[in-house]
Amino acid sequence: MTDAGANWLDILLTFTRLGLISFGGANLAEIERVLVGQRHWITPDTLASGFALGQVMPGPNMLAMTHYGFAAGGWAGAAAATLGFYGPTALLSAAAALAWRRLLGWKWLPTIRSALLPFGGGVLLAGVLVLARGSVQNVAGAVIAAAAFALLTRTRVNPALVVIGAAALGALIGL
Amino acid sequence: MSAPAAPPPAPPEDAPHHPPAPVPVTPTHSDLLRVFAGVAMVGIGGGLPAHMRRAALGRAWMTELDFAETYTLAQLTPGPNAVNLAAMIGARLRGWTGALWAVVGVLTPGLIAMLAVTVVTLGLPGGLPAPLQSALRGAACAALAVMLTAALPVLRVVGGLRGGWVLALVTFAGIGLLRLDLLPVLAVVVGAGLILHRPRPEPERP
Image (cartoon, rainbow over all chains, first blue to last red; front, side, top):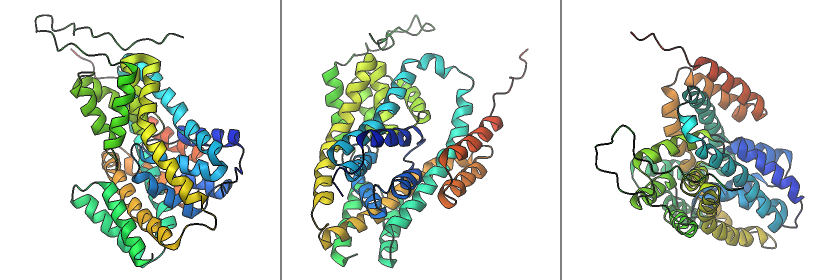
């Protein structure tokens, strides 16, 4: 699994594309389609567990990309995935911020926002579906997911704690 | 190669008689690195934009309005929003190199932690011990719930847009159910959205 299978340049380009086409959050459906279905770099299990690990890491929760990159091509793969996923979009953001004065008065800006948001919402929902297929494999899993959802929406508990609690529960019941 | 510096702290033109606003502070590169790494550490479990707002406003790096504008813009750029927001704040404060240090800062703590865990979980010969595997499955189920709660605010906004629900459902069906290629779906859905929300000439003012 970590035998540096894939070429780092291939990984860099693939993750660059994945970064540039996520709007409004992680585009997990496309990530699964490409990394699991097309390239066979990771398994559905790795997809789900890497995503879960990302939730308990400090910082942005899409650090799962580094995990996937490592699975695809070892250390070079992890570096290429991280650089590809975060680099170009950060560059684009910096450029947009430096041009912000002109951009904010632009009359098409609200239009673009209103056009991108439904797409982003649909993509997020598709990601939920993909993640559910990978992570909920039995009734106990569904119960944990439902309980976590109830906790997250009804209390102000830190999501990282919920994920860690679910991990402890999973280990305890041998999920 | 010199980057355009952050916008100069010019006083607002329309308020010449008001007392000057508190002098904005320009952070050094190491300030950016340190503060954004700190934001990443306290942001375990999410909420990074809120932590960035507190860090930038609390140090008088930005005003509330500066932050709101930057945040809006960060929603529009593709890619991970929290990292984009860090890049934008860094760029506004210190140009291109400021963006670089802010991004490095916000990514570094998580990268170290993620790599450490990754090497253990993916590198074990014969795979993970059963209890650890069960723990990861439990964590994945909770992460699903986290993802769903992250989607809800977006969907609420989408529901208020003209054609929002239809376009979101078309996207969901195309990408989630039919597993179509993303770019054609993007072209159709965003194209339709652009037409629906195209700027219209404002009504004549007297």
